Image (cartoon, rainbow, N blue to C red; front, side, top):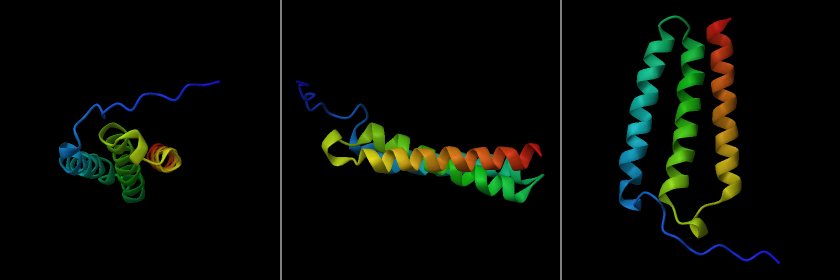
Length: 93
């Protein structure tokens, strides 16, 4: 029988969640500005993909295990990776 894991606090304190999300949006906007100079659609996909991945990462490391939905994290991560892949394809095409 599998023993449940102990409840541990998140690695990053919850107080920093909003600040980290703002940092994610600023970084994604900066990368969007770099990519969209050549192709607008690629920049949009890359920007939104980075935001989705960043939000999933911030939620993973700032929420208690009991408070986060693993399926939502997986879905957001897959969405972010898919948008990044589409953006990279459009940029390199």
